[in-house]
Length: 193
Image (cartoon, rainbow, N blue to C red; front, side):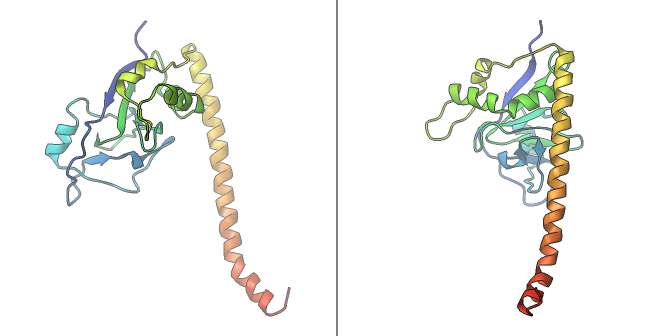
């Protein structure tokens, strides 16, 4: 039986000197990784030399899972197409064999409270809990057959889509209420309510 994770790579435990101008090569920080979300609202560019140096262990590829090792610990997202990145401090790369474990299944598991609890039980660090690559084998991942993993992923993706729709509706309603507030206050102060 092949291992469920083909590649587990820790970041280089140092921070590169970020470039003064856009190079097209991104140095990812833990703030770029939120649960399920690859967030590029803030970008840090690295030089080609640092890009190669920081990727000496493994070059991140589209579809890889990026996991925060600490600050915060345990956020994970999937690296999308079209970005060239290297991992800086506090990040870890996971690459799966999709014929054994579906990356979406692993993504949901890593973002679960079950994973967080396990990590807290085995992690190191007295003041700031963190995940080490050598701790990874101690994390137990329930692995049902691939067809069941696909069913679980489809179900959880459907729930996330519903939650996303509710959040968008809530944001729209909040914006409408905020737009109405000045006219309501105006009417209130004119004694029309």
